[in-house]
Length: 253
Ligand SMILES: [Zn+2]
Picture 1 (tube, rainbow, N blue to C red):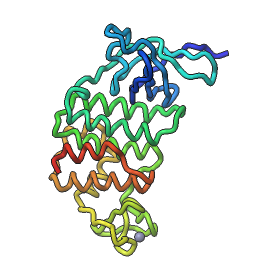
Picture 2 (cartoon, protein in one colour; picture 1 turned 30 degrees about the vertical axis):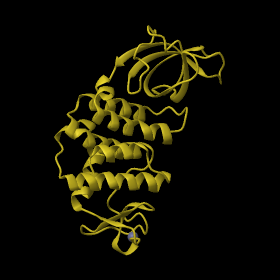
Picture 3 (tube, rainbow, N blue to C red; picture 1 turned 45 degrees about the vertical axis):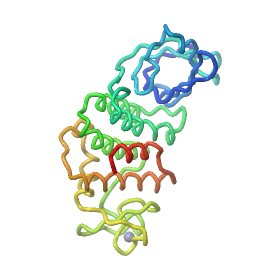
Picture 4 (cartoon, rainbow, N blue to C red; picture 1 turned 135 degrees about the vertical axis):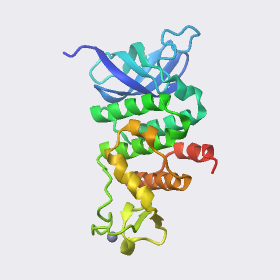
């Protein structure tokens, strides 16, 4: 029989109060994938967990469960990185939510995925330290890598609709087929994508997250890239993300 105690690392995704001194906490772990856990005694002033179970925190966890298919409870937690700048700075908080939301919404529970785990850990650690004017570049690299890990690696060679090679710098996007779409397949609502945004998509697939610190681009290109990423999520998952509304409000558009 497997041990009832499980040691793992995790990123706290969401934490919701549930009754007296009780929280339901969603965690992306390195060894169990995404799980839902229960924690008791977390709302007392001198909680034994402190801020270790706040969203964005990277922690070492000791979990317990009574039976093979029972709910995990958190027995002990020790922070590896608090990532407190993400909770204290509004710009970083909004971007941090945009990192976490697709994991909460689109990742299946209980599937171990080391690549995804490392992507989320690294993105939040870098977000915590990066300067505010680079956070949306980081998020854009993250989004393209997240989709790639989920099996939707972006390419800019072939039309998503007809499969024909794309030539020149005429690229379109829409919320049905996503990106890229050729001239003859474009719908009435399709938008033309500027070559600078296409170049970013190409570059980002091979870039590392820390490269975000070196990126510079016009406000217009950034707007197109964010829009393109929204279209990709909608084309793939049939819905958008709540965190985008915050991003738009906060971006002063
Ligand atoms: Zn086409």
